[in-house]
Amino acid sequence: MLSCGAAWAYPKFIGLGYTSCITCHYSPTGGGALNDYGRALYAVEIAQKPFWEKKKSTDELGQESGFLGSKPLPYWIRPGIKYRRLVQQINPGSGTAKRDGDYWMQMDLNLNFFTSEEQTKGLITTLEYLHNPKAITPNRTLSHEGDLQHFALREYFWRQQIDDSRWISVGFMDKPFGIKHADHTAFNRTVLPLAQNDQVHGAMYSHYGKKTELHAMAYLGNLQRPGDQQQPGASAVFEFEPVEKIRYGVSGLYEKVENSDDIYGLSAHTKVGLLDHNAWMFEAGTKRQKEWTPFLFSQMSLLLTQGLYLEPSVQYSQSDLTAQGVRQMRSGMGLLYFPFQRLELRSQLLYYSTSQQNSIGSDTWIVQAQIHLSL
Image 1 (tube, rainbow, N blue to C red):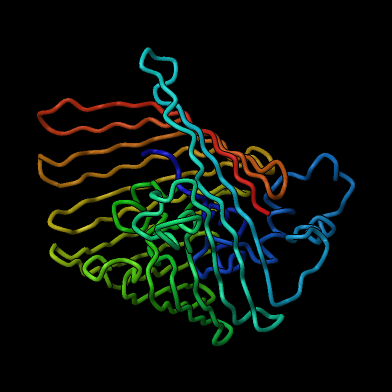
Image 2 (cartoon, rainbow, N blue to C red; image 1 turned 120 degrees about the horizontal axis):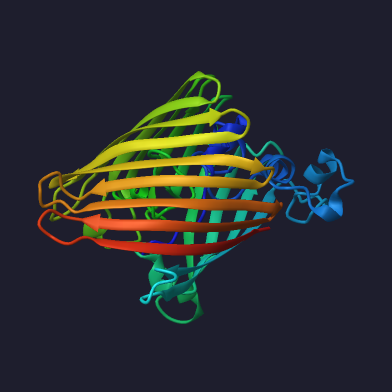
């Protein structure tokens, strides 16, 4: 399926000067719930100022960005709600045009608990309501029967600050690797097991230096799955910032696979802030499991006006470097619009092609539209 996965992170905001995900997110590598600063930033710098609040100052907008608006919550809890839906049509305007589907992509309740006002220690959790329980694969729902089969825990981990630059996180969470961006169906997320439901149980060490950032994780695999399907391993990502708004990174991954070849992954990436609020992201990598599977990902984010971005992108992967390998190309042009804090609208035109030596390839055009509510 070519539909975009749930949005978890926006590394494109390096164009605004924000290079570390933990600045705005509770998760060390980005995604999931926004912290108080991230909510205020969303209201003031990212989204357009609502026409009915034109007279309000940026300070007032930031103060009203909380879960209950300007009403403060106790320091020990930070809730959040996320809803995302997508519709898409395949080959629009042609005789074979069809509406492929209406996807309920995300309905999450974030409940985050802390032991102090500084929020240096806390339990981060995301409970998801599933429109289609099978869509959570390879994770599992809370129950196979009754109402609980429509619920799953997407993440639950304890995070704790050691000092000004170091954090430890332990629990069920995403693996650190490459560019963690909004589209979990992109080739740099799906060639390796890094997609929307590929969380694992493990421990992650995070270090934030003045010019460097490191996340390293050892994991037992997904302990909710049968023992021979858990796939324990390790992954890490390291980034270096030689000058302001330019980051270079390298990543590595290893997973043990029962009754099959183990998985090895390598990649290099760059994130560049261009002029004022624009950005370019690029990642090139490969997976090694029986064969080499290379992949490329490139996306630009061009600011048209505050809250509105134009996003051209190109992706490529090849299942095998021999003549028998299936080559996939995916390019697109998207619009990302934040009319006000709490609402995101996204539209995208995609061209998807596959080819293989001595066979006839396929070409597909896809039009997508998304709505994302974040409370």
